[in-house]
Length: 259
Ligand SMILES: C[S@@+](CC[C@H](N)C(=O)[O-])C[C@H]1O[C@@H](n2cnc3c(N)ncnc32)[C@H](O)[C@@H]1O
Image (cartoon, rainbow, N blue to C red; front, side, top):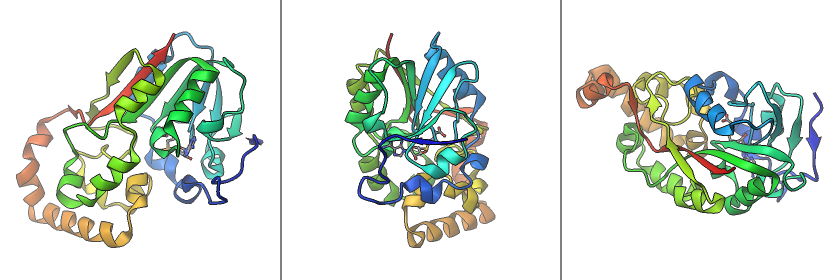
């Protein structure tokens, strides 16, 4: 399928978009979770035309609507099975005002250099918006990063857009929590909270931009410590309570705006 590049210049400064480097293999680890898909489909309501901004490989796009996928990464769009694909950035959407019934953006706002401008663009081109994101100010943090990679919080606090900024920019009317089920199929960063061995797998780590952004010299010693704690039973001693839980609220939120 041909990909339209609407006035697109890679990376703004000639750099390769990050997901052109880390996107290969994304689809195998980041399989859409049916429970999150249902939440997003409900949020889109009766929208017939939908623009999916930061669409990546097309996760969570409803099959029963006319969807246009937008992403700056060619590697990601190449994995997208859809027929309407546009290579562009959220901050400059090549569409007329009100072109779509709804806009969706899933786990992508933190990648946008200018989230305020991107969210304003979502409002300009659609009458309803559904944005799924993670709140960096949420209290419950994933044990992996608390105990093995505390370096990550500095990075994530600067990278993720505060929830208040997302809700403010969209003039949101609803915020829905998505507690992460223990068997969630989409391998985003906190997905494996009850499956600690998964973090030992380099393929799993490669599908998360958090890991991909950190140098191996930081990640590898943390993984070695986790491997040892799993072998010795130390991880289980510390986290036996987690094995009793079905889901944990790690701050993932679906933000709804418009009509
Ligand atoms: C974690 S992936 C999420 C993909 C998909 N929405 C999903 O849920 O699987 C983040 C996506 O945001 C895209 N992205 C990065 N910068 C962007 C920008 N300025 N505008 C729109 N999308 C962007 C990346 O290329 C990548 O495909």
